[in-house]
Image 1: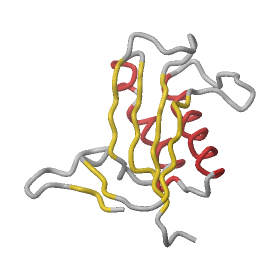
Image 2: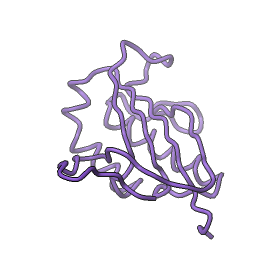
Image 3: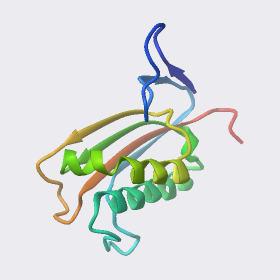
Length: 133
């Protein structure tokens, strides 16, 4: 994986501007903050984000992928202000569960998610390098 940073551009905080990768692609559907039994673990965006990230890690494992193979994430949040206020907690969860901030990321505020209790939904794309054992 190669993080793409045009010459002279500042390094973005919390994401990459672009990523180049080759290998087996893994696409993870939007994950919300519920557990394996379909129960939401928290009412807060930060708590739900942590669980959604854990769910992504679990789905990646099935494909033989690891968090460091994530190249792209899209975050859908129902409240921009809550999302921004939760940056520290989300950052901590991200570092603990995913590791680096080298994925190309987009965050979008939406009016609602399909699951009424959901505060965040996260999609991920990973690329497992051909030489990854």
